[in-house]
Length: 294
Ligand SMILES: [Zn+2]
Image (spheres, rainbow, N blue to C red):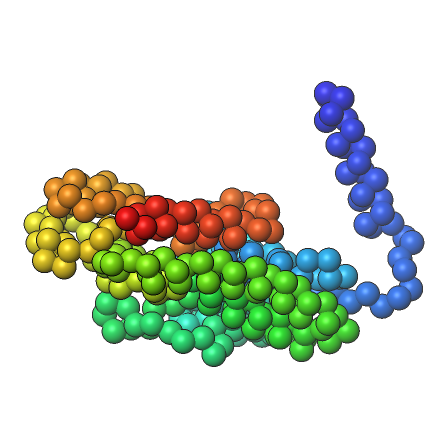
């Protein structure tokens, strides 16, 4: 074992002693198991619960999964649900995979719907577009909704949840304000997007977006997509970093329209830093500013 490895084990052993030792404070520190359905909701809930005594946040679907449109619950997910006190969901229909099973798997769980009161967009087929998390302005509202739900469930710490939400939402609103300026300055506000998730991000930037390519489209559609682009003449063609972008790069090359990649923050690393969402959105902002400023 390396010296560093040994030190780490020693520290872990100490931590376990403290965590599980017989000396428990008599004060009733209520443990609140908060389970977040998706990666962005996990980021928001983690910020709201930061430094709140007894509150722990875990993530239901793997961080790398991204949009859960095709997700199916596994046995380990059912176990997480059974242990949760509170389940925080994105809402707006994103958690279709939970709708039929939740009542059986976790009959007593309290559900916080982060989409409450948020203005929803329709997707290309006229259905509700659930990807509200991709707009920093809406993400701020989601954070406030989560804090209100947690304050109700754990009123002793209500002030802490609300204070955390205020700090976090304010940071997201500052990014949102910078997003708005992108479209306000742009002559051609047109942005062709690959996936519905980017519709909220583009709307936050005051751009005119339309979904052009649903992921999974075959190369046979290249011709009609190319025609659509040449007719609508958007300023850019934006790929969603969750997906393969070969088709879009080909389209961009053949139409002469600039190609950019944007990250809706649907997925991310296993143990993200608390400010991961801000980092990703600031990167998106730089990409948008870089193309719409000229
Ligand atoms: Zn999606």
